[in-house]
Image 1 (spheres, protein in one colour):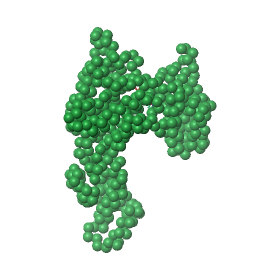
Image 2 (spheres, rainbow, N blue to C red):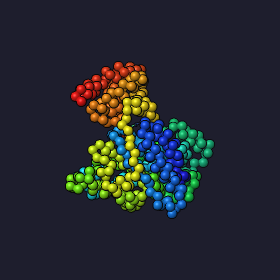
Image 3 (cartoon, rainbow, N blue to C red):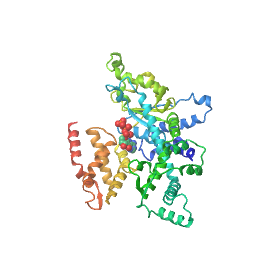
Length: 450
Ligand SMILES: Nc1ncnc2c1ncn2[C@@H]1O[C@H](COP(=O)(O)OP(=O)(O)OP(=O)(O)O)[C@@H](O)[C@H]1O
């Protein structure tokens, strides 16, 4: 059971062809076809690499990517979504963090350590998700144990026992108080490492388990309802403590980890600056990053990690510097360059309503929890997109992040007063205008000054 649960943290998306993967990304990210293509190919290359004979496989390293594009245009989102789709451990870091006082020269290794932590967390979450399919079996086992505890081991009357069990399962005994002993958790955990156990054997092994360890820590007497819940949680948690999960997570990090390094443009220095030594710390960070991206061994508290096959995606706006201002060796290690476009008003409309869990859908769902139904007319969506575009152009370009600010403004009053507002609210362009007057005014003033 355990090996089945653990098998392959990567999922079926790992098998997708680049075109199919782009289609999946299209559901969440509007436009940016080149960047989607590049990451989809990078992912498929990993699958291809896995199918190579051993001797060639170790020679093939991932083709790392440099994403160039303005802030808020989807660079991080593409990488994060890719990782999520294929179940790959993912971490985002800001390159500038390592130029801060106290950071320089130390610990870009921390990036890999954090990736391992993210990988372990994800592996545990994966197991928890998969365990959900076994909840009925686990609950039945816990109930059986509790019944055994209530009736004692020698209770002879099977008919009465069955009736009691039915009562227990129905939840009718949940308020009764029982006291539980300390579980022999060591015994259970030592069994967990044994992969040879079948489901039945595993459940059998767990019969020695007394639910409620965490409860016993602060009280011995618990209600049956609490014990039933705690028993299930404790069993699920004990699976996730298995040391093999850490080992699998390390493998997963090495084989399919993705590191997203943002603000790489901020540590690029024009050749002059390096020659005159005006920006030595930025260059130092580039040098520190080199071995990680080239492939090295990093020692973490969970074990050694070889970084050769981790996919690195570096990203930046490059408004003040150029990619060619990066150290030549670093450029060489980021051979795939993709440019992302500044988002247009049309893109904004699609981002607002057409992506899975789009901003509009999220806000509708949020207010639904208060019993409020809101509906956006098409002209309201157009207007929000227009205002966001206008403010980006005249005040500061924050890309799609601006949409969040505008939608927040539009819904501020309803959010503040809910649920004491009308139950059905239509939001049209006029309503949008009335709630975003301040934003429009600032944009107008700036426009006239330009
Ligand atoms: N093309 C897009 N399609 C859908 N949503 C987008 C798109 N671009 C940005 N967003 C949304 O805008 C927000 C910011 O985007 P993201 O984090 O990808 O920015 P970025 O390009 O990495 O910029 P930065 O370098 O400043 O981090 C996210 O919530 C994301 O969902």
